[in-house]
Length: 199
Length: 218
Ligand SMILES: [Zn+2]
Image (tube, rainbow over all chains, first blue to last red; front, side, top):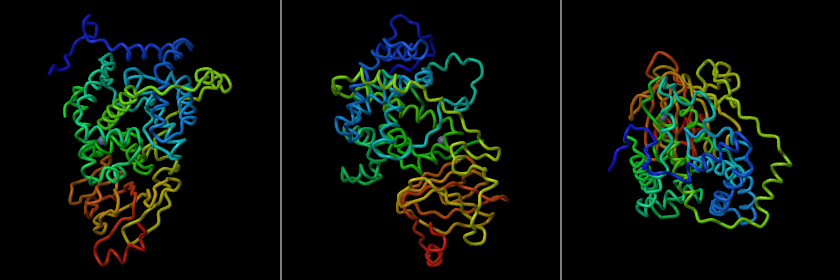
């Protein structure tokens, strides 16, 4: 396995991340210029997936259309809060959709740290240019998801897509809560390893 | 502040998936305000959420999808003002708690349960059969031996305690399984103040504790 080398990102044949990098530019164009063109491209890429996500969360097709649209409305409105150093576009849009879905479908609240705040990370001092590298690497993630064993992918999908808590997943799969948690931990550990973190 | 105890990775995954109960998510967010390690892990788990979203098959949007979106944007063009960071109160209360404790820790109206143990229940948080509460434990006082019907998550806001698992100081989060059996003791000269979320009622195991339970109501 290749380790992440401390190097610049402009090596010509470094694996490009076309869709992710493109979506970063679209979000930045929406934020900086209110670009309708960029928004429509982003919509084309994400809205049908957002609808799919909402259906998996239990929305009927009409509600899923509504929530996918509403997610995109919020993406337009909140685009200036997007920070490419902290999240891939898909991860940021996922958070918008997740929070909307929890509010509208589950009618409860998910408390979270406000990531727009200045103070969420300790100041790393000079060398702040490296912050762009903090964003989890989407390409490695894609490879990872393909290699997760089914039993781990199942518990991950039941949580992220069907909105089941760990104990609900245990009931659904007829496995103990401790097994659900250990599969989650294993999947997460592989994810972190794939992204080059130290375990 | 050195933080030694963090939420379980499975809990961080649940937070990213949005399936953590409201009370637990409040305690986890309060911990993460001061814990870059966990914020980074959460970002990784949310990146997984983004990747799973990106891999979903496309569902065809109804006819006027994009047109409807533009209409919504034009009908209510006022952008939401970016959320202002709520000031963290000077007594170390995490910002995410200020809507529930607006005067900070200093103005909490405590209720004494038994000598040495006081509590304050936070209202307006959907916790099912559980609750979110502040507990103040005087030095040397022990919380009776108990297990949990569901999970229990405890964030230390001030002081410290010791139990069978270890020593927990300000910023530490104890993320306990239903199977864990523990008996915390406040172990310094100052009161230990913790934020505790449960999703089921606690079960006290000793005879004295069971008699105490109706009194404490946790
Ligand atoms: Zn932590």
